Image (cartoon, rainbow, N blue to C red; front, top):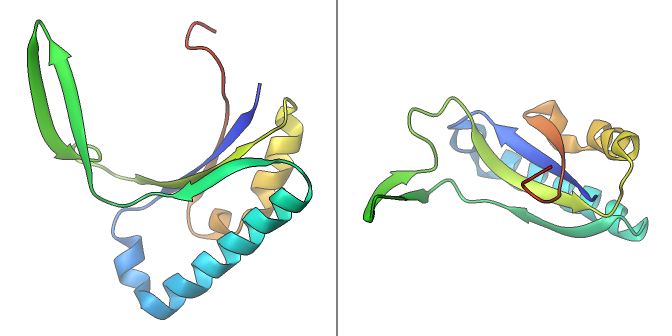
Length: 115
């Protein structure tokens, strides 16, 4: 089962740090992704935007609200999907992830929803 490194940021952090610091942080994240790629571990990675829509369908009715989360205390800022079944390998890479300095890196196995 692959493992996901999910980057969970405090909301407003991107705006508060400013463009120059944001560009430096992004460059560090790109370098981290390149290192994962060189090791043959990276399946894909993406930064995520701060705007989202949430859709639910219940009893034939669709509800659409602005997101990403209602009353969020944190936001999902991006992810790295690693080609490793070893949770310890995923954790070792999470410890090296630059985002761990300003966000939380959640390590999650990826697999069927019935597991």
